[in-house]
Image (cartoon, rainbow, N blue to C red):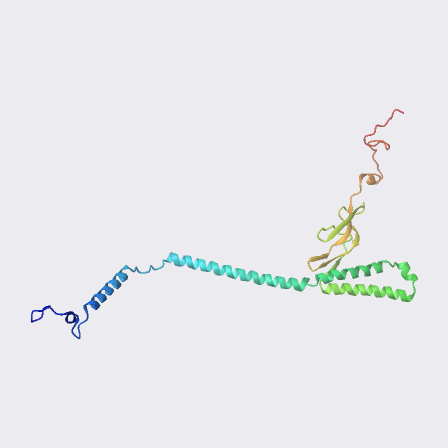
Length: 237
């Protein structure tokens, strides 16, 4: 812009502006910023809406997680309840196992006195024996109240879950596998074995023992009585 006098304006005159007119630099900066915002807004893509299949899959996954969590919670509750019941039912098992020896000693003391000896002793000793028997009965009653029961399997079929076989004995009057002797009675507490019964089990008599009991009819032996296996017998005489 040239002044009226034909001279070019100075730097101060060029930078001077009207009071309400914005600076050219500010206008250019604002235009560039507006152009940049417009570009970014044009570049930003709208968010894709989830499909029905995606929502159904997420719903199924959340449902599965919820069911698994509920199942774990129910299993933990049942396990805690079972442990509480076992503690109430079997918490005295260790103590009861130690008390069993007292019952064994009482039973041995009573079994050591037969009827003849009992009738021959004086009144004081007889009362002592009666007192021991009452003590044993009371102890068994206390055991019963706490779910402890004695096992006396004489005549029963051998059960490896309840009995411990100490020996076998040949018995013709008992079926094989039958308990014929009880060395030490056993005990159970509710459904668990506190101590297995130590027993003797019957087995079938051997052929040599049962040879003479054939209902009065005997069969001839296959070889002479003096003949043994691996030995030749001279029968020429």
